[in-house]
Length: 222
Ligand code: AP5
Ligand code: MG
Image (cartoon, rainbow, N blue to C red; front, side, top):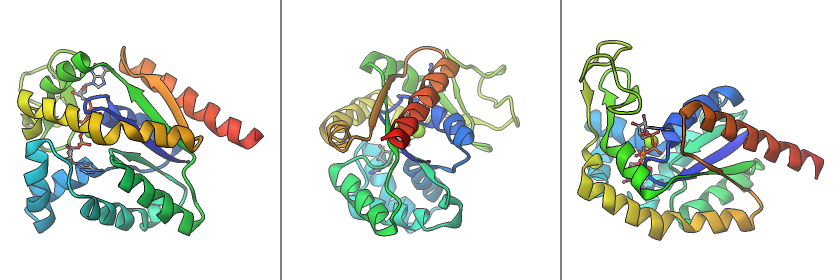
């Protein structure tokens, strides 16, 4: 299964990626997570990406496409992958299509997670991440037992630098301007499935898996 999750910041891409990737036995690849790992490791890439991320803007296409090309050349993607947060521009979508065409392994499906803007702001402003294991909590919707401490390993919880109100607004604008057009692009390509991504996490996971299995079955029948 080769699939892409597309959706606004805070749509729950990372949350759902974990469960959906496990269900289909493929690696979940998040460009945002790759950039944040580079920031933590203080690499040149991390320094460059941080400037854009802190402003809520996109990291330039050349940089991002190169990273995904490298990641998709690793052996663990032989049976497929789930991309979370890539592509985010039409140029990235075209580059992905071309690189997969070259390999003879085109995308199977693109799943759009739909949420409204108020829900995005609620989700992002309450998000807290464990500095040790990376688990993502939410102050209101999925709070840890003890404030500021991860239930799983006792790690310190932090708020992402780009989850400040001003930056959230900018990320939403960037999504509308640069990423939302991908929905039409993938609809035209016959790859798009969309689900409502509001409500309990497990119900969204069920909807996501049902939509993806239906898409794969429909293609097998075609
Ligand atoms: P990235 O890390 O991809 O951020 P994003 O797209 O803004 O999305 P988020 O990670 O904020 O949200 P999510 O949809 O994963 O939601 P989550 O599951 O965490 O990118 C960050 C930056 O990196 C970009 O701004 C850009 O600068 C750069 N970048 C990355 N990729 C790039 C690319 N391709 N090109 C250029 N630049 C790129 O959920 C959010 C919160 O809600 C959590 O607290 C969670 O617990 C909670 N939650 C989840 N589901 C539910 C639910 N059903 N009910 C209640 N709460 C829920
Ligand atoms: Mg994410």
